[in-house]
Image 1: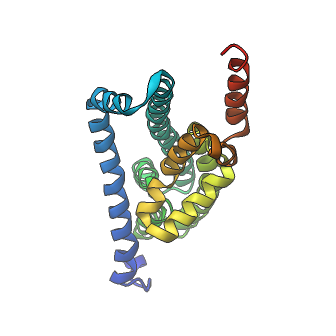
Image 2: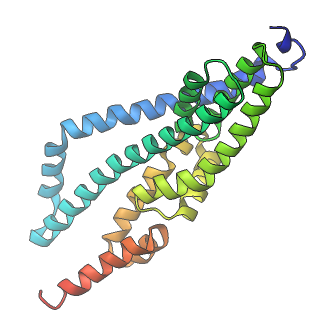
Length: 239
């Protein structure tokens, strides 16, 4: 452990990101709990909304909105799992090339923490660096860890999250990046976790309100909005 003695890291420096990451992981875990409860009571909630809807057209619109919200929740979780899988592969390859001990385990752990943008990556990368410094491989594992983490985070922040997760919930890449940054500044790690699904839900509501459809177009993918508009146009003459 002699390699750790010269590192000026205080407890406060470690506890700050750690506490934020733990909070973010707990929030993400609660999202799974809420999703499970939502699925258990889906029929009751659906029945309540449909009872409140006025007329046949109102009930049809409410039914469509509920279906799209349920679809967004499932696709968001799928997108996050895809990102975790991709990061696990990237970390595992980089750590293994650098000769890091327990490379695959640390890669999976660091990738799982990526559910909390920014803060989770700090904790995962910090753990990998500590393991590299504690080993007997010299500076090579530490350099490999740092290079791998930097490259992987660039890929996650500017490719995987906007184009994979954002695409899964029909939110365009620019809005995805901006929303994560903005919500993180406002609500910290909680905002980072809820940013994308919240924007996706706002987009769905805007898509079904006549005066707000332009905002749905702004938030979403062009193809998705265009398909919706074309569908309405095709249905109009027959009504």
